[in-house]
Image (cartoon, rainbow, N blue to C red):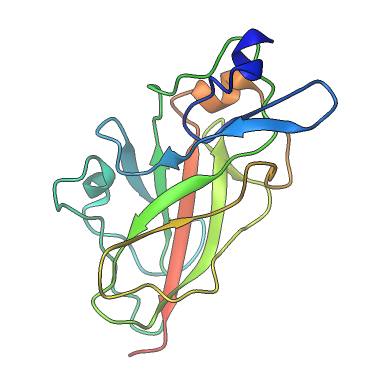
Length: 171
């Protein structure tokens, strides 16, 4: 398509050239003012506080203190402002996650995508501990489908998103 040929792809999606070759990608940035956050007990035992803190970049954060346990999923959804061309073929999703820890002992347990409101596909946790200074980190990749298939409609749905669960060694 012309949109793919011009790399006119936004927010974490990649077009392909019809032969499966990625033509362009950008990042799906969490912290978008339209994002919705929720705690989900699908994993772990420790609930997230202020899950709505995922919206925007106003120094409000969703927080959790695992104390040696594993957090619930923090569900981050509602990327309805993504600009994906109507004829785009999804060949990869690459979320950019802004994160920060009070200590350097927090690590990912699971980072998965949300399709149709359900946590699906492969987990793509980072092995890098969370820093005590704010950082942004890419997950997935321009050709990473997270172990499932994706359509433009699924990615544009308000119930598409990212699920994150963390742990730490401190008690």
